[in-house]
Amino acid sequence: MEIIRQDFEKRNADLEKKIEQMEEEKMNLRLDIDVQKLETKKLRKEKNKAEEVLDSLKTVIKSCVCQ
Image (cartoon, rainbow, N blue to C red; front, side, top):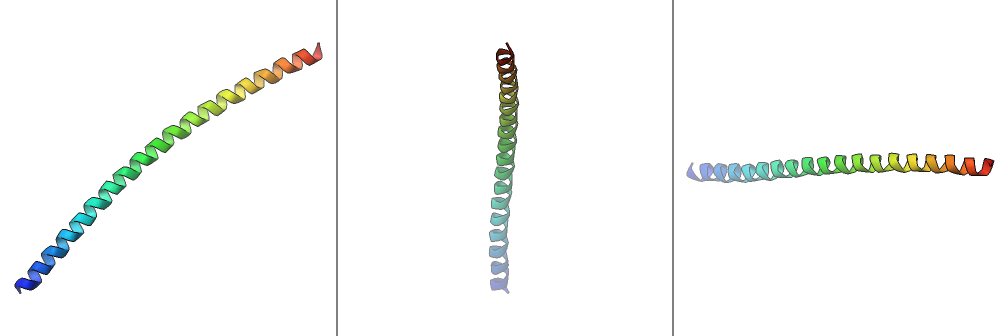
């Protein structure tokens, strides 16, 4: 009976370690997602700014060509 109890306790401890590792990995993945969201937001802002500059350059070129 003692052997069964010890085996159960060992398995339980192993499972607790696995759960802790998975929770830590989950937290790290959430942090990675947050970083990716911030990078995506930054890239979208840069893209929008570049499109605005391109549009203004097109307008300048059109006005120069038309003269």
